[in-house]
Length: 536
Image (cartoon, rainbow, N blue to C red; front, side, top):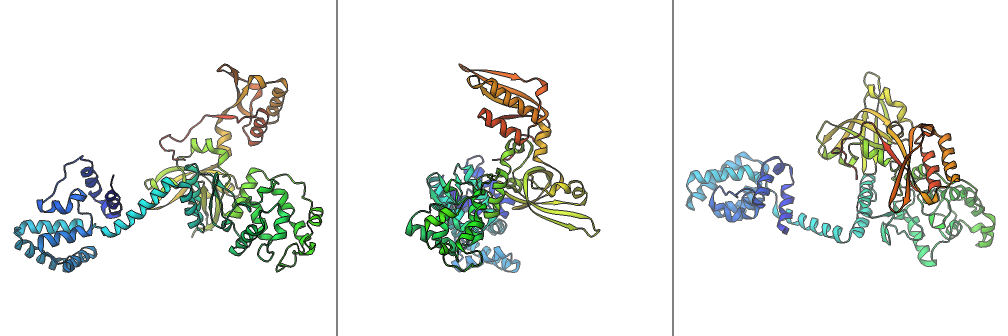
């Protein structure tokens, strides 16, 4: 309601006040839930702003000044003694306080109780001037985030560019806020994250193996001679001593050449030929990668032929994105399992620290790092880093669990891991007890596949194509057709058991390509309890 609330919040949100009744007393007093009590009327003018709670160190000093005639210097010494819990010094101050308070008309018993109150709650006190400074920063940043969210998040991403865990969380927060994170683009990206129409454009300096000198060289050339036309134009114009093969690989993998509308796999496959043509294969210090072509655009375009390669599938594209950037931006391996994750995981990784210690959890993610070690008895165990779109956490597999599930650690399939969360303040890890791939969970729990069709578009040819897919991917899932019959009417038709299907990605993709709509899965089996689910 007022700025002073933020100041108080900063002082209250600390272990001491949180571990006592101070926070509850403050909230009840502020909202009129409980009557504000001042132990002594003399304290009301000093403690009124904090609803009778001794919250700030300055309040301790003021009490000593007003009630016991302390000088500012003496009051500051009292503040220091309380904070450092110097009992001998506090004993001297108690005698000094009683003497001064008695001279001011307070009886000694009352003065002693006030001093005990100061000693008890003053130890939790926070410096108000610090609280004001932090509250002002919090208010300013909250204002910017509320009124200029895209600019704020772009600045935050730039600030945390070198911190992978923070960047993952920031990207996840952008998506929750409805802000699109666009991949690097050689014709639009700056060195840092920047605001563009439609969202935040990834900064070139965030691409692995692309040093700042290379970025500056690219941006300088683009500003001087205009946007790059294609891979050839880029290689011809940039400084070859700063933009080498490794840089080109990273730029292609993360999508920086997507403006050419050419498939990443074909561009990547053309690199050997590009380097051969430019004569830079054995000359990394060459200043111009296309010097051997003498600047002849026609010669370059005529000599280079892009290989006829199939585009990387979504899984491979994301893997290479992660390789180039350190994290995923255009998607995540868990995206194709959103329904499974929502129904069977109990917590997102970022929510682990909000749980109580030893809480049973089920978390979905992909393995990013894996260490296998031996116990003192010589048994194998594993420590891995599990990542989801909200962050990463450590997972420990002790020998008995490792022996049961080690085969799942060798692949790169997204996993559902069940275990116990070990929470310690702002950090958390999982002691694993069971795991399975999300694909296995999906195959095991999907009971039906639902296809949405429009009556006007249903033809014999379409139905025959769908039937052929059923026969090529047989399984245990029943098939439902939800048919839009027009005029707001729908028909739900269940196919004969003869047409049961496997809910694999290949079948799903082929059917969706034919009907022009997403198919829906109907699940059965045990799910996460709705109140446990903490997914964005």
